[in-house]
Image (tube, rainbow, N blue to C red):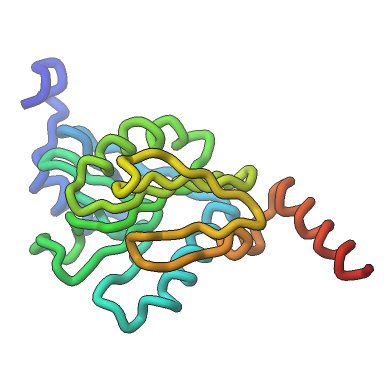
Length: 201
């Protein structure tokens, strides 16, 4: 039960889930409180689209699949999140078609407004999920991908342009360039210019 000062605004998880299905605005749920989700930039959308498409192209015949930010993730009995992308499998325990509970991979794209939560609160919630094998954070304003792996005792690895991200959870390797395709930031502009110079001789 939340502190007495917050009880007047307390929303039961069942009430939240019922209301969320009819809501035009997505809300995350944390211990009786709901928080509206902000819109996302074009670069954010491009990264999520690229990552999801790359995964789906290789996973169409597998028992696991990528889903994007319209799917809720239950991280605790009183916590529900909307990851930018996650990979779920057929053996997920959830009986609710709008909620998953056992992702093997979770991806968040960072922005100024979400960076702190993605790196702290959500980080702890996601890594506590027994099913999770990898957590990926992707910067949108510059090129950097951070991956935490259960197999590495949750030690972080970083990836940059010219490198390949190994995703053990799904058995795939994705190039950083492909993940950032059409993303407009200074790193990508410099990379594209250098490629053009190299191809012209």
